[in-house]
Image 1 (spheres, rainbow, N blue to C red):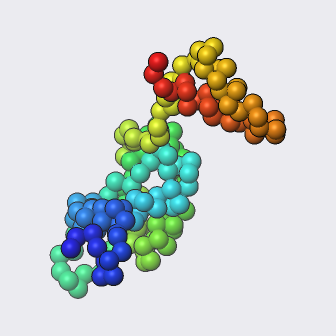
Image 2 (image 1 turned 90 degrees about the horizontal axis):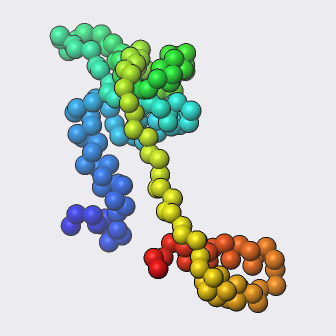
Image 3 (image 1 turned 45 degrees about the horizontal axis):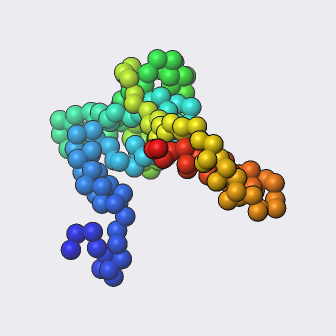
Length: 166
């Protein structure tokens, strides 16, 4: 059955997605999803937020006995990240090769294009509490002796009540 291990334990969706996406990514871009997922560790948080690996271009081999030639890693980045990436090219090549386990990458080609960044969830707008809601909230947390805890719970309650529609 799909999604089940031999012992009946459920499989995380990320594992299933990796099993589906990895062959497609290997065929189209010549790299594994592990490289994309580990990009922040390889490039560092400063560059990873403004860049991403696009594909690995392997050189064509005319015959099977041709010597191995390292590939070109194509990295998409935006604006000034290209300059920073260019200065750290040697270090990134070494880190990618260490990640892959052999000297697969010989050079990096930088392509400037917009890179979508996960901005996370947007904060919901919180409406101001009515006088009745404020009285009810302070009455609810008023019995708590610790001032810090009472203030924290009051802020939490105000946030929860402020998200509800009137």
